[in-house]
Image (cartoon, rainbow, N blue to C red; front, side, top):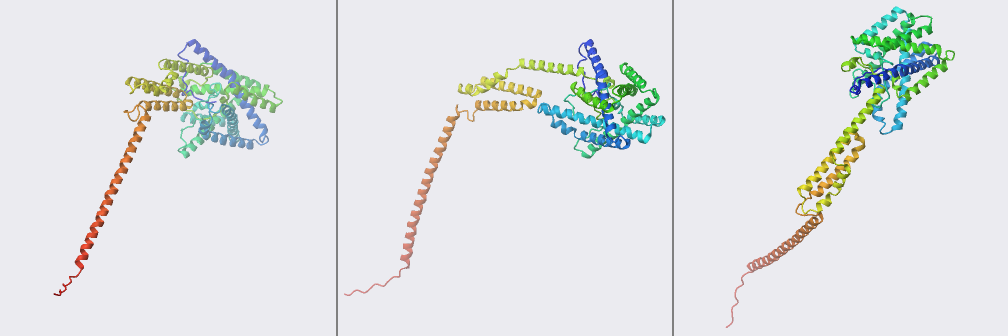
Length: 491
């Protein structure tokens, strides 16, 4: 519902001026006469269903219930935006993504209407509808929005629409953009964005709407509704001077709220006035389905905080009414990418040729006694070009080609390892392994012989040692024997 053109590059301005003006006029017409009435009808239907079904006899209780649903639901979905964005993607689970994303939009739309309905009815309950009180509260809210540079958040269809594109589908811009790492500040940021800025915007809308109800043909609802519609479309279709940014936003807001009030009250007066429940249900359900079919259901939502003058140059006064232009921009972007890829493909060998070259690397090497510099250069060139091609493709579609790039790199490494074996002295790995095995066997045999010689020497030493010990013992024994006297001989 609200929005900004920051980050949207209008890629069609470089084309024909006539074509660009025609497409811009189509966007404004679709926003003004198709999307805006459908969005207003949905809000009117949901608002009316809550009036009938939730404490119709007690407006205060009904407003409290809407406040709880609105403020709590908006805060929760604001905190869950990163989780939803990581979990759901059309490239992984397309059907699940589209089903859950539209269910998310339906839930968030109901929450947004209750957020506004609760704040609106509580303001009326506590401040009343006296003209001077309403004017003071509205003026104070406008001043606070100006001081905080958040006046742009008053924008709504037909001055701001949002398509159901994948980019930023679950994004809810916060005022201070704290990350979840600072959990306390992150929660305060979410609460401030929802409760403070959101409540100020509701106060301004409620104030100007109430003043129109008081002063524009009071007591004549049909005439008042038609007058509001005429004023609103007159301001929307007029080229508003953009000398002062705040004045520009306020004039556009006046046109927006008159369009909303005119369509809303015309439906109340002319579309099944005697069957309000059926009238509300049809506008609630049918308009949502039509917005989903034309890919603009996000235009219903009021989410996030946008600051004034975030855009560059003339985009500060350019409201986000991109519908047909986004379609043509996507087509032009894909066309430019295809042309760029074709130019790059024309300057490099095909992947089939490169794959065949890498697969034939062992055969090429085996046909040469030693890898020649030419063969090495050709193989490395093909490998390098193939890797560069994979990286280029990876930049276009990273998730799909990671596995392919890994296989390519393994094949290149295998080819290179076959070009440079561990020992250039041998042409084939089998011969090298045989020689290594033979050398190891020779070493083992030599070691066994050495062990035998050492054992023999040790045995000889042991025998020699035993003989020496015997001689020593004999000498000691001889020394210990006593010297006997000689016996006399008989003559």
